[in-house]
Image (tube, rainbow, N blue to C red; front, side, top):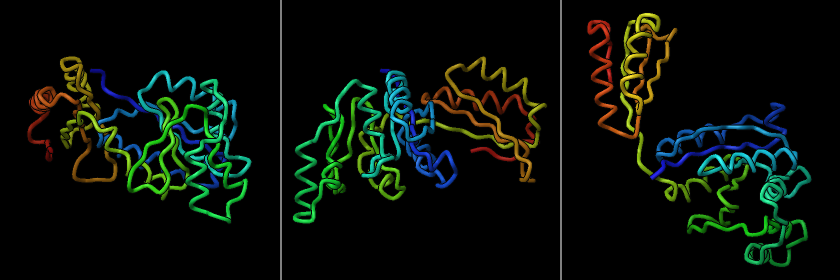
Length: 243
């Protein structure tokens, strides 16, 4: 079975202009990693229907899941749904289920602006959860999340278990050797264990160690084997600790 992959598409002029600090992608990075989903791409695009459509049409074919953030409100610059509709060659239609939810919630206060929130890509589907007041909207493999961080997190948290798959296994080595001293050893381990991802991260502020080496894969046996091999190639007296 092919392991699932994901892309995050952040939508909003306010992100690109720096008016709003982006936090949803940062949150989703760790959530997807804990769920075992390999994140392959993060993109930020403006509030432009054609641009959104072009990107969604492309990345929805390349990755198992696409998660969007932002652009789903009632104002003129909330064009995410229009972009997604165009990406899949669909029309925007009023969904009866969503319209009923809005009418039941607002009663006599409901306006056409409120009801426009029920206009979604034709063929879009919903993920229901008892923790959600409003269902999560999806179209094909694109999961459409709000831009407000509180609501973004609430919605994803309520449905995240549907994405859980085989977990990643990680071992770390902290050493006082620098990257120049261990480059050859790391290249050898990467070659000997191609199913394992090897990373090195120098630290310039921590006096405890100079480099953190990470060894990661969904194959735990390969991780342990690569970890043992890496330890054997490093200077034992310069290994600070490992985990």
